[in-house]
Image 1: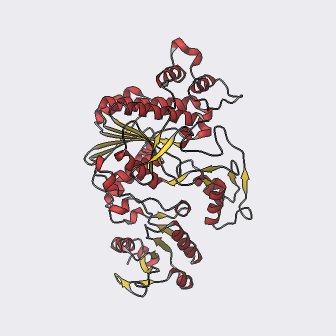
Image 2: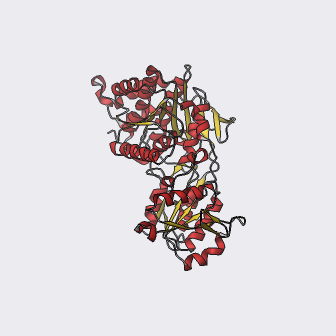
Image 3: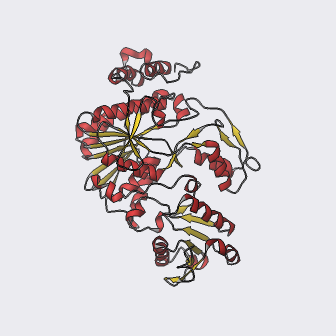
Length: 493
């Protein structure tokens, strides 16, 4: 018996198929420890043995026993558990003083396949904060990528990387991971190959591609060379206050980069194109929101020409890079304060796996030239989210961890919306996916405004006066987006 097996004692919460599968894998590997018991609330299982491992319970009744016979680790193997159940289980395990609590999350991949130990991870606040996600069969919803070559832009980002993970279950011939950051592309490439080694998903070639969407010649070259049939466009600059200070780069990347990949996809014969958009594109006050609205228009215009090019728009996702959940975590772990912009600020929230599974579903059933929304439920007040996170880490809001308010940052709103007052959402045949019947946002002026923006973003010796001029950029955007804010102190450069 190895040191790891003798030292690490593991309880698995959930004596169902998922728990049994994880227990068998731990036993077969032999180096991660020993499963000493299952914990379950099912009276029919309590007192029995599964694979020679005892089943104890109910969970609430064995807390004192767990304290008297301490174990190192608990693994929650209940992928269909509700958020209320997970909160109760987590609080019970905390009382039992486990040094490590992992979870087998309710990710879409597990619906169609057996779970694997590699899919477990440390439990996060977002596991307990949101509603129970909609269940989507990936093998069914991804039938449109089977045998196809699929390209994901922004594959190293939060949404792009999750698209790639879930695409492993779709039977694609090849997945191209396109991105300009070599480290993030390296990381997701290694992760996907490791997942495949451990039996997750189907056999598929994973091909990293380092490149820049703003490089129009390269984008046209690489789309023809790769012969992709399906494109998911997730690449974007996204941090609102940072892009307020780097507004020209926001438009250059998010607008002209999107135009490059759309036009290159059309020329290369890409049959299906799915653009990932944001609620910031609704009556945008920020340059980021304005850039995503223009990008939506580019894709939708292309989709009206007989190809399946469509847009999927949704709000915030929990735990994405640069989002408030990782920020709050760092602030809590250093003792506070947790900083909020406004006491009434609220946002729509969804987990990354749920949002991506719905994007993949919409990508297969959606029509070209249409904009789809993800039904994200009711918005959550940021203050409530902060308080729940503080409690997750074992502290009391205000008493032990203070909450302070900094004021709205440039480009931010108190409340975000998924559609404007002029638009109207319509239900589809698919749960949590809405189709937006929209008023024309740019009113047919897309090409003219792009021509005005071009010399601001790209050097033109005949128009040097406007190159990189931030005020000129905002004035130009305001021609078609009257909601855009122009700060009085906005510098020209």
